[in-house]
Length: 368
Ligand SMILES: O=C(O)CCc1c2[nH]c(c1CC(=O)O)Cc1[nH]c(c(CC(=O)O)c1CCC(=O)O)Cc1[nH]c(c(CC(=O)O)c1CCC(=O)O)Cc1[nH]c(c(CCC(=O)O)c1CC(=O)O)C2
Image (cartoon, rainbow, N blue to C red):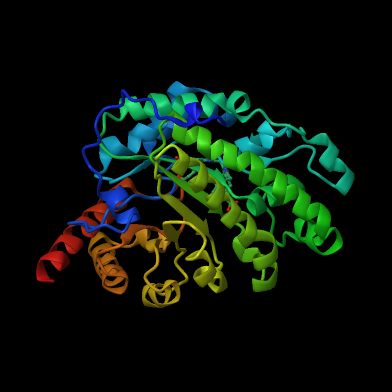
């Protein structure tokens, strides 16, 4: 991308609530900011109504639809951030692969990569600006329509997670197909991961140019690797993405907080806290105090309530939140779930979660 293309459009409404951005940058906040992964989604009746009868990726390709779905949860809840409605699998599509959303089965690649030669089916040069133009339009439109209420987060899937979908062709229990590539074809695997990284870097920079105020990188399948493979096939690419995006943004005087979510990669926490990301997002299986120890105060932490705790009565949600806040502390912290919302969750529980984070963190800050 050229320097000029990276300059932000300037006529966006002024941001009224910067709590999330302050926490991400390690600045003091009066309350702990909170948002939820998959906060736009099937647990909301208005989402189900809006999506009814429409193809999932057609929805992703409509900037107006993405904008509406991004705004829906903000009308109900006092979230401190929003995330653009889209999907991680738009990147493999931009590289030339077909992906369908099969109801009841999830994302499905009719023709996944089977052998190293299949890499030839991928586009050698991906014009990200053109191929994913609909995402950038959605971000710009949403940034206007949000009227500065809260910041807008852009996101991408990370290389290993996308590679696993491209080879498995869908979700999997064992991930044995994609893992077999790591052991049988390590060099080709690195080649594919490198190509994904290049596209992702461009993709994130274009999202910032379109108006994204923070970026989250989803390495949702990190946990199917052991520590050795994580260090070889995940970490270097996650680092490369943050370093390259940050370097390019710095040239234009911009500093956009970056969040990494490597689900279930406990053994990688220390490394992740030294990988150019401002925020490390945690799943629910890690103890908050241990996570603070392992990341040594170098980064802001995000997470990590078990999404299933939202099935608890409201009073119990409030207690769980309080314990979580005591574990993380109220500074350099963004409250979230340890992964996304499930379709059968009650929106009222989300309201209770958000309210508890705000209430307890304000009280705890007063006592300090
Ligand atoms: O359950 C299904 O039928 C397919 C769900 C699925 C999708 N993409 C996928 C998966 C696999 C999975 O999550 O396990 C594949 C997918 N999409 C995404 C991730 C990253 C992650 O959740 O760890 C993943 C990988 C998850 C994994 O494999 O573990 C990211 C995603 N999907 C989505 C969003 C946008 C948003 O929430 O605003 C986001 C981004 C950020 C976020 O908010 O967390 C939206 C999305 N994608 C999808 C759906 C459901 C389909 C529909 O609305 O018709 C929905 C809405 C919803 O969750 O209710 C499709």
